[in-house]
Length: 263
Image 1 (cartoon, rainbow, N blue to C red):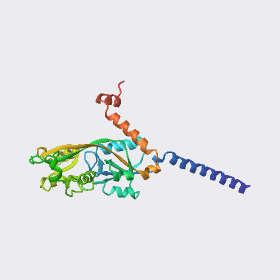
Image 2: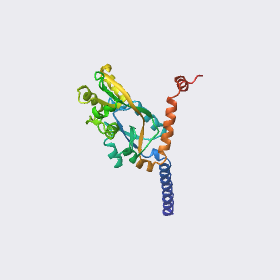
Image 3: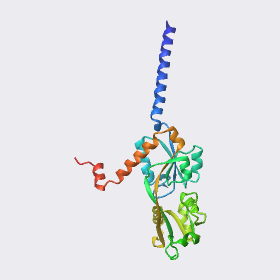
Image 4: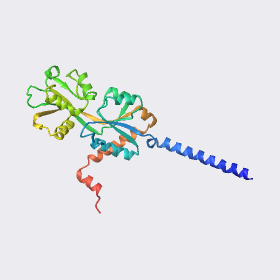
C-alpha cells in the first residue's frame, strides 16, 4: 500500500512538473521579449550618446532606456567608439542592436531600421579664417581635403560621393585636432555633436564655421536574427517610439499638466 501511495505521489509530482514546464515555456513563447536580453552597441556621439563617469549617458540613451522599460525588455548596452566592429558582431549573432544610427545598405542587409527617434544634421565644420572654403561650391568636392570619423556612416558617404577624403580618427573628439593643425580643410560630423564638443572643451566657437549639409533620420537598428526570435518586437518598438515622440512634441504646459495633474 505504501508502494502504491509512493507511485501515486510521484505520478502527481511528474504531472505538476510537466504542467509547470509547459507554462514556463509558454510564457517565454508568448512573452519572448522578456526572455532574451537585447545586446546593444552605443557609440560616442555626444549629446545623443556618450560615456560619463564610466556610465553610458545622453538624451538618446535615456530615450532608449525609457522605451525598453515600457516594452519590458532586458538589455545589455556596450559603449563603442563607432559601429565599425558592430556589423561583424551582428553578422556573428553577437550583437542585436545599434543605437543611434543612420541608414546604410550594409546595415540594412543585417538589420531592420526603426522609426526615427531623432533627426540628425550632418554638417561641415571648417576654420572661420578660411574664407576660401565654400562647401556648396562645385570646386569644393574636387579641391578640399576633408575627413570624418573612421568607420562611420559619414566617412563611408564621403568616399562614395568621391570627396578628397583623408583618414580620420577613430575617436570623434579628435577630428577637431585635424582641423586645428591644418591637416584637413574641413570635417563632417553631426552638427549637434560639433557644437557639444566645442562647448565641452571650451574651444572658441568664433574660430569655426558650421554648415548643415543634410538631415537624416536617427533611429535604432535591430538585427534580423533577433527579430526572427522576437517577430513582434519591431512593431512594438515602433509604436513605443511614436508614443515617445508624440509626448516630446506636446506643448510644455500640457506636459506639466500631465506630470502634475491639478486637483
